[in-house]
Length: 629
Image (cartoon, rainbow, N blue to C red):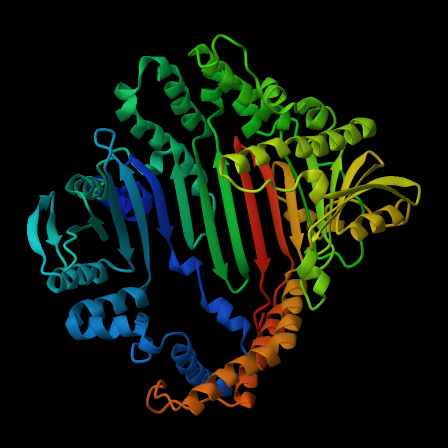
C-alpha cells in the first residue's frame, strides 16, 4: 500500500466512526436524561409463536368450526343488542389501513418483515411538571424507515413543522385532535408530543453527545437483563430531579423532610424488568440498584442496610415432603427496616410533629395498640422463611374450600420467645376488637362479633408437640407449632400434623440440588431467595377440573341455545347454527387436551434472588419443551 494512502484511509475511518457509533447506539441513548419511565421492545427476543408451538399436534379443526357458533350464541345470550356488531381485531385494523392508507400499510408490512426495535420514554422536565412522551424506533433498514415516515405523513395529513439539522420535522394530526411530531435521523424514526423532546432525540441520533437515559445508573443495570423482548426501566433519580420543581412550594417546616424524600429516591435509584420468550422458555428478570456511595455520604445507613439485606441468610430448609408441587424461600432484614422507619419518625419529631416527644415504631405500637414489637417479632425471628405447597388445585373440594395445603417454616433464635410472640399476635387480634366496634358505633351499625366469638383457638398436642389450631368461618383452618428451633405454620392443620410426624425421619439431603435448582446455574452473588414450582402439576389439576366441569358447561350453553330456539327469537346472525350438546363437548374436550399437553411440555419454573454489585437481581424462568427440541 502506498504510504500516502495510509493517512487517507485513517481519515476515512475517522469520519466513518461517528456514523457507525450512532448506528450501533441503543435506542435508550436517544431518550432524554429526564426520562422517568422507559419501555423497550425487541420483537426478536419475544416470540409468541413459541406458545402456539406448544400446542402443535392438537387437533382443533372441528373445535374451530363449533367455536364460531358458540361465539354467536354467547353474544345472543349476553347482549342481544350486540349480535350485529363485530369487534375490531388486528386483521380488521389492517384491512382498514390498507384501504385508507395503502402506502403506509405496505411500509408497515415491510418493517415487520425486516425486523424492528422501539423504545418509549415518559419524560418529566425539570422546568415544567407536564410529562411528555417520546417514541424512537429503528427498522431493519433505513429505506424501510423512510418509507414508513413517508406513509405516515401522507396518511395523517402531515405538515412541515420545521427542521433540526438535516431532518425535516412533520406535524401529524388525526380526528382525535391529538397532534404528534415525527421525523427521521440516521435510520431512527422519532415521534414525540413535544418539539423539544423531538429535537433533542434527533440531535442525539446524530451523535451530539447530549446526556441521555442511557447515562442513568439504572440503565447500566437494565442493559444486563438480556435477552429481553420487553424491558421496562423506572429511573427514580430522574423522578427526584423532577421533584426539584416543587422545592420552592414546600413550607419551611417540611423542607428537611422533602429533601430527605428526594435523597431517598436518589439512593433507591431505580428498578428494571425484562421479559423474554422463545422456544426454550419464558424468562422474567428484575433488578433493583441503589447508590451505596450516596447512601453512605448522606448517612442513610439504615436504608442501605435494608436495600442490601445486610445479615440476610437463608437457613437450610427441611426436607421437602413427597408430593410437594412448589417450594420457596426468602429473607428480609426486619431489624434494618425498623431502624429505617425510626429514622423517619426522628425527622418528623424534629419538625415538632410529636410535640417534643420521642416517637419510635416500638413506642407508637405500644402506646396506641399495646403491642410489644420486640416480644412479638424482633426477639426471635431469624429473618428468613421457607414455604412449601403440598398440592395443586384439583377436583378435591377441600382445595377450593381451604386452599391447597401449605407449610411455612420460620427459623427462630428461641423457641420460648417464638411461642411468646405467637401469643402476642393473638392478643393483638383480640385487642383490635375495640377498633372495629368503635367504627361500627360511628356508622350506626350493629356490634360486630369479637375475635373470641368468631375465632376458635385451641391448644392441642400431637406426637408430643404442642400446637395451636385456629379456625374461623367455613375455610380458615391454621395450625401453629414451635419445634426444632422453627415456627411452623400449616394450612389446613393436617399439613402441620404431617410435618410433626416427619420429625427425625429420613429425607432428601438439604441443598440447592434437592430443591430442583441446578447448582451450576445459580446466579452470581449472595443467594437470598429461591422458588421452584411444578407448573405441570398445576396444569394437570386444572385439566382435571375442566374435565369435571365439561358436562356442566356444555349443558348450560346448550340449554341457553335451546331456550332461544324455543322462544323463536331471531337473535343469531344469519348462517349461524345452534350447537348441539355433543358439539359443545368437542370444545371442552379440546380445552382438557390442551391443558394436558401444556402440562407435558412445561418444565419446573425456577426463580432466584441474589445480591451483587449494589443491586438485587431476581430471575424467574419457565422452560418449554416445544416439539422438535
